[in-house]
Amino acid sequence: MNLARPKRTLTLAQEEALDRAMAARQTCPECGRRYYFCLPLRTQGCCDPCTQRYELSLDTYLPSTAPANHRLAA
Image (tube, rainbow, N blue to C red; front, side, top):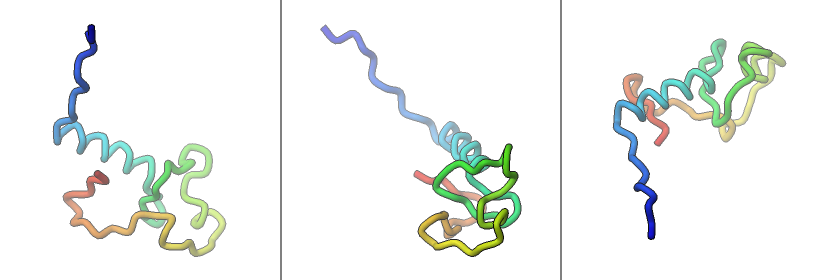
């Protein structure tokens, strides 16, 4: 007997809100690059390349190819 209910799917509004929240944690305030991981914004304030002043490789961050009004990761 299976009493578990099926998992609810996210609405588009919920998915957009989640993407905005993750973008705030993954985007450097200095250079504006969005990374694949959350940045140490509370302790460091920006990404490692901005802190240590070096250039990074393209496979580390998400280059912005979407229009500014739609940046959903999924």
